[in-house]
Image (cartoon, rainbow, N blue to C red):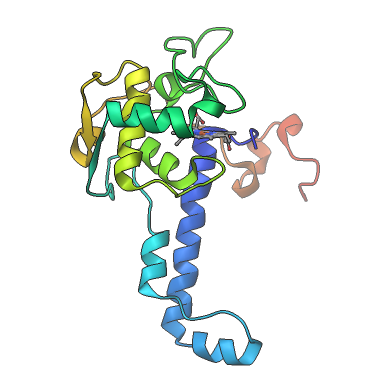
Length: 210
Ligand code: HEC
């Protein structure tokens, strides 16, 4: 569960949703769903309501954030009830990840990755929490509750004031401390590289066909 780093996990989650939507579009477009149901005895045509439930991607720039808002204070109550058992009462971590602190440690010998020290964008925090937390009941929180608990986590990281209320606009306007800490990886993608002669022999996967 901890093997994927956070951004990979999010990319995976986003791709997964896109794939589901693509499948949904295919099923709908061919109008063969009802036919398939008769032929194979399972499945059903995807309803617009189901598609809306899957279409929950929030993008880094805040696109697709829902209406609604929530305060740090409301978030503190929700957090204490539904998050603290795993993440610690102040986000210090437990069976779940540490969510606060670690600012300025990324380049040190002991980097501490938290929401505050590592995450480059605030809107994707909303996406992650709505999609995946609490771990035992994902997608059980309302949009208002997700705004609130997002605000609380940002407050624990010193990024919004104690009396803050966040909505789509104010959440997207937050500049996370590590916003510019991600750089493009210039290394070639070995499996797709047409010129493998440039790849040092030691870097070639053992199974690569010549
Ligand atoms: C039952 C334990 C549990 C509960 C309750 C829980 N979490 Fe988590 N949380 C986890 C675990 C475990 C992970 C790591 C998941 C992974 O790496 O795939 C995680 C990951 C996260 C992350 C991503 C951290 C990072 O930097 O990668 C956030 C943010 C988060 N949780 C927020 C919340 C919030 C907000 C709540 C309450 C609404 C909550 N969690 C409730 C166990 C829990």
